[in-house]
Length: 316
Image (cartoon, rainbow, N blue to C red; front, side, top):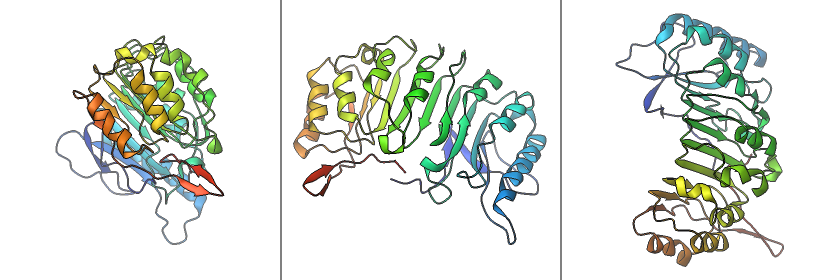
């Protein structure tokens, strides 16, 4: 999988691009505004694009006023060379008091591979915006998190081709009493995804996030191990949705998951992009007749020198 297109909706709202110059377009009702600087006019140097982003962002904040509720940040120049404009976003917080949803890193693979994106520590965004309810971040290089206390955040999505144990540990050490939706793209060790089952223990034990109802441990090279751990994990009992999609789940992991605690209370079990046999995939729906099960997008392992290889949907 590659990121071939930008988000068309975010936080339940249509996405509207902020022009590089000129007035904002007229819109009907609430929208998500998207700011990005990627196109290269003749004579533009790479470094100029990050400066251009800063200028476009400042013009947007001045023009849009304090009513902006949802914002998507796309390319801030070439993200492999320039770190995300987190400081600028934080500095604008007093002028964006209504902001409730933020997506940082909405880029296609052509603009920057996810593993190359330089982001920095995203936690200051939560400190700067105490009323934020949805935070979605994408990145890979210099991508970090620090433990925070945030009373309003309901949804946290972290998209990566390789999520470090330090990042995951900091998320799990955070105090997020309103969090209902947590999605972590764990990725592969080749791209820094060294998170293991032991690192997720506080989450799996149900010791974090009492309001959690939807959990995604996605894009995981360790999908079979995750499934086996979730078979007896107390956190599952509080969930409505469990998402193990985009990873390397095979028959062994699925067998362990279905042999564990009951899953019939779930509304959704998402396993799409998997390495299940046809028989195993068919068995899930039969075992969970009242659950909406997604076993679409089956994958075939690659064979090389007698070895079999499975791949996550997103790595580089």
